[in-house]
Structure formats: C-alpha cells, structure tokens
Length: 220
Image (cartoon, rainbow, N blue to C red; front, side, top):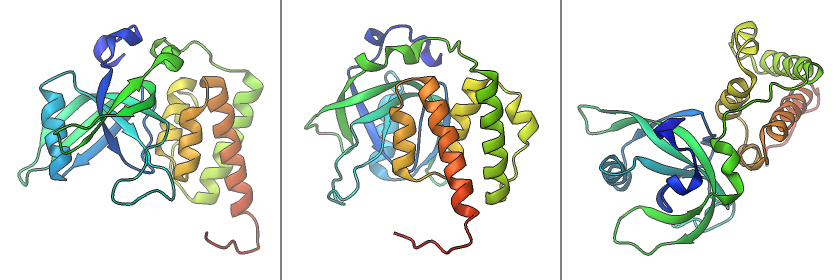
C-alpha cells in the first residue's frame, strides 16, 4: 500500500485536489501525470515537502467553467514517482490510496483548491483485496473485454492481461480505457470491488453492442 497507510486516521484530513475530467484514480492504481500549470506546480512543490497526498477529482457537468463544482467523491493518491524536465514540467505518478467524500472547500492562500476529505465510507480501500470473483463471471468479463477491444481496435495482450490478478486487471482497465467522465465516476463510486467488476463488465458489453450497430449514432 502506498505510504503504508493502514487506517483512515493515518490520512491527512485536508488535502489539495487536482480537478481533471476523464482522469480516474482508483485505490492501488498508478496514474502518471504531467504537471505544467503554475498553480499545480506549486501544489506538487507543497505536497513533496509534506505527506505527498493529492486528491484526484472530476467536476460536475454544467457547472461554472472558471471554478467548476467538484464531484462528491474523489480518490486520494500518494506521489510515488517524481521527475523534473528541462523545460520546468513535473512528471509524477500518483498511486491510489483511498477514496474520499469531498467535504468543505477551504478558503486558502494557495493558488490550488483544498478540501476536507471524509474517508469514512471507504475504509475497505486500505484492505488487501481478497475476492478473485466467480469463474463464470470472469469468463463473461473476458468475453466482454475481447469484444470491446476488437470493436475499438485496441492493441492489448488479452491473454496476458486476463491472467493477471483480477483486482489489478479491473483497476487498470477502469482507469485506462476511454470511458466517458460520467462512466468513470460511476466506476469510482461503485461501493466495492464486486460492484466495480460488474459495472466494468456491463460498460464493455454496452460499448461493443453500440459499436456493432449499423445505425449511426449522434454525438451529444
């Protein structure tokens, strides 16, 4: 576990947040980020001098573009890799630690946003995953994944991927596949691993069916 966190009381109660739509961080997942905006460079400087925790969170559709409303659930990650480029960018990797409910947003002097994080509903995120799932569900999942990848023409070694531990596989696919922000938020908010596993399977099946439809689809 990133940072060795064992209890939610070990986690900081006030954290900086990085609002980024379409970017999903899940517990035990690794999210590479390229940081170049001055306010977020400032944020990384501050967290590297402290506990290295950043909250990844999406924004609500239809909110003010200048200061969009935050979604109600995000995921706290710890900076586990850090490098600087010659042109002043930071290349970091966040490793997901625990989801949180977005509480009060603080009025702070910092140029980036900070919130009170409530981890109480997600303490199970700190536990070692145990559930490898029902074999029948896994076969259904693998079939849905193969159909999805074929329709999307995505080059992933399915055999290697599907032999990976199920928790790691579901986490990496949920984070990495090009789902809509609302679908990624739904995967984030799934109560636990079994629900996320089934939700991901359903998204793969739905996408493959839509792509297989001969009728054109309008873009909303």
